[in-house]
Length: 347
Figure 1 (cartoon, rainbow, N blue to C red):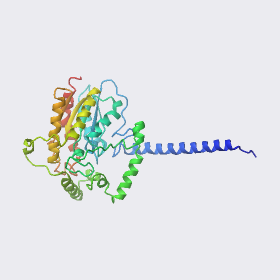
Figure 2: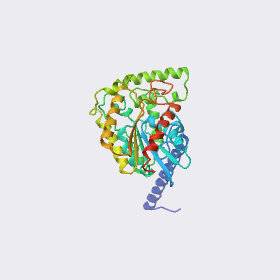
Figure 3: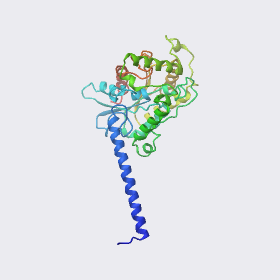
């Protein structure tokens, strides 16, 4: 019988612990990667934290576009190929001899404050065009849709993960577990836990049955109480311009545009379909800020899609905010020409 010294016993124990930890970590990593591939084209993201398939190194001649925004850019409730960034890529590639790649960096719940972080985190994509598409999540308290613009939305969807901050890899298992726990605590009302009792159900996008339409109408009614109503007619365009109330939002957008231009990218700042009178006022302030700061820059354009679709029609916006596939395509169609125009000097 061989007797081990204390030093050897310690060494063997240490090796056993390291091997066990390494094996456990590897198992978790493989499970996480597997789950990514299972959900990345349905309702999730890929291993690098964005929707759709992973894009590789940009080949010569490709024009690469990144889309930044919240859940309406993400395409909440729909598979990745029914989001408007996916439709935009399809439409742009309709001409022979041109190659476009649109990368969907939409981050549910995130507002304009997150734009600068996403631009930095994904600078390695070597994007040529940046599309900024968010205003809803900056209409006040982002978790309650308070229409008073008093609380800045500092939520960073991806940067909650220390692994992502350190490596760029976005682990999906913690997100799944966190949302499962939130769903249990909120009685199944997952988005209620995120957004102050406004429950957005992704299932409504896929089934427009009579019961689903009733549920969608209920969600839209609750949302309307949170963000306020949208006034018919053009009277709002003649109201006094309020730039003070929306300063934190417009400053965040202006900073992101300036960062993108520093990196050599062209920028489209897009107004989403109008959701409320507060949103109209917010976007008027944004238009003024963009004109003041970038009025002489041909590489920056503001595109107003406020009236592109009517969010009060739940056959278009199934829950009063998120669009169905055909409406997303309508948004994409409105952006094809602005993208080509902002690139005119570049090409």
